[in-house]
Image (tube, rainbow, N blue to C red):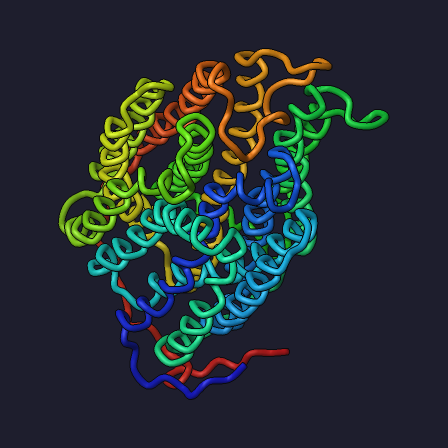
Amino acid sequence: MSTPPATAVRPWPALWSLVIGFFMILIDTTIVSVANPAIMRGLHTDINTVIWVTSAYLLAYAVPLLITGRLGDRFGPKNLYLIGLTIFTLASLWCGLSGSVEVLIIARTVQGLGAALMTPQTMAVITRIFPPDRRGAAMGLWGATAGVATLVGPILGGVLVDGVGWEWIFFINVPVGIVGFIMVWRNVPQLATSPHRFDLVGVFLSAAGMFLLVFGIQEGGTYDWGTIVGPISVWGLIIAGIVVLAAFVGWQAITKSEPLLPLDLFKDRNFSVGNLVITTVGFTITCMSLPLVFFYQTVRGLTPTQSALMLVPMAVISAGLAPVVGKMIDRVNPKWFALFGLTVLSVSLLWYSLLMTPDQPLWMMLFPSALLGFANGFMWGPVSNMTTRNLPPHKAGAGSGVFNTTRQIGAVLGSASIAALIQARLTAEMPAAPGGASGLSEIGGGELPVFLHEPFTTAMSQTLLLPAAVALLGALFVLFFQKPKKAAWAAPETRAAAPVPVEG
């Protein structure tokens, strides 16, 4: 792929162009949650299967991020972004045309691969074209995009599902993808590239370990946390996944070729702490929507649009705050903003859990929604700024890949864990169905009978305690951030100023 050489770097037009696609792929991590009941009805499936519509996307998104960050350094972030955007847009069309849940899961997997190509390039470009003392505002925009997208997804999904059908949560990506492609082509410069080798053993180990771990957690309840087939058990898969991931880290430490995961990045304390924090953020944000959506729709009888509108205070406050916070973190230690955001996130989810009863006035549920908006406005930009501030330009892609990988690992584990916990709590709280069946597999896409409202609500309330606890853990991690140092910085080289040949 070739483009006219860039003669000047215009940071803000470039960033706004990238944000369009970034916003779209993040929306797709949450937009499906509000459409799950409609997909279950339309494709005649159950909740255990429909959860994989999200989990397959998140897994395909998370696993390649380490290598796609390196690919951006090697072949240019602009080129990788455009390839990923093309794959994502075409896969979105495929998702909307799916006639079965199996085809939809496959299409979502391809969509996740496209997202994996795109995501690291956004942060890599920010790191390379904005000086450190002006990067806070840019990260504020990135943070606003990440935070608002996770909240707008359910709202937009509800409107589309009610208005034109669940297929349109995917069809809408096609025109957005086309506009995003044109803007990135015109506004994002071709930055200098650097050669990299690729650790194929590391790619295999990281992919295998993640799959074993997530599949084991996701499907544990289906097999009653016992035997799957023959000698293969749920706990065997989980333990095998942990062992393989440990082997991956060990391989990265001893490999003589260029490692997929540059462990020397973790010598920077803030980078290490930031990756722990963003893992808890990804876990929490992905966890929290499913119990809320099922409570609103199956207990309170709200339509997808109505249930999504319950999140409007969160989206509005987050969108307004994030840019303001982004400008402030160039002058004030971002650590304190991040600590406030994560703490408030935990408190808001605990508040939701306490308020969640079958007869609770719905207007009361708007207050924790508003508090969640403050949490999102204060945490995304400061965490990303603290984590990546000290990255040198030649490691921008690798660092961005690691940061986004840990965020997505948190999201994947959050999706799998909340499904397993919901099933466990439903089994414990709800009366057994005829034949001994219980819990999650019996929940359909419509409103529950009144006599089931109380036990179902209790189960959903209890599951919200998991993301609340993980958010509080993230707040504790934030305390270990060091005050960022002023870093030397040189203006980015475009390929016009310093052409670097790219092989093959």
